[in-house]
Image (cartoon, rainbow, N blue to C red):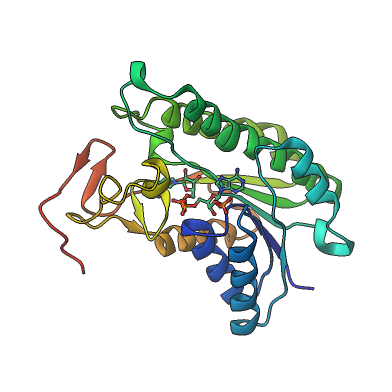
Length: 257
Ligand SMILES: NC(=O)c1ccc[n+]([C@@H]2O[C@H](COP(=O)([O-])OP(=O)(O)OC[C@H]3O[C@@H](n4cnc5c(N)ncnc54)[C@H](OP(=O)(O)O)[C@@H]3O)[C@@H](O)[C@H]2O)c1
């Protein structure tokens, strides 16, 4: 069996791109998301293109029982995850604080924070037993700097940043590496469409500048994962070259394609 990478939220965007990057490098994969057809399609694509095995594991990261049942259903060596990429996540809405939908807040916290915790708790226990493993959290530039209308999404990613740091303190002496990647805007994802409830006009936010692509982030995650044993990358904060911070974007037109 090859090394195993477990990627949550692999049905689109950064998770799907990261799956391709790791499959190309010869990793077997456990891929998660809620959309079963998309997972099946990704599995057959990866297995036909690369000499790797892929296990689909559909579950909702928000649901503690579902997460546990799914993880326990992994048989044989499949529970021996070498690298966990905690990528499943989302933003819902971008309204001013007093107008926000409270259910959107609950969904973001439950997915981006509790979901990451439910999955990590199970995988980390296995990794500690084996004295090795690497957990890579997909944080965001929103986990380092707030922006108007970012309120609870930013708070959830600040929580991810705090968890990356605190997981590392608890686990570094037990053989585990803990890292994160913190991208600014990323295209080739469903992120904006999800944030704006499928409103294509509102989600059209990349037409006047070049953000990162999902593959750029996938490659950064692989870079983090492929360092020598004595190196732990704590965080990669990355933006497209036309974005200098969450609040500074050169929207003078796309320059690179
Ligand atoms: N795009 C950006 O600008 C950007 C920037 C910085 C950080 N990020 C972060 O990058 C990560 C990936 O987002 P993306 O940009 O690639 O967006 P995306 O294309 O919308 O992908 C989100 C993924 O998360 C999965 N997901 C959402 N809720 C889930 C749940 N409850 N259970 C299981 N899977 C769930 C989705 O799968 P299903 O719908 O099939 O469940 C999907 O595969 C997120 O954590 C996001 O916060 C994105």
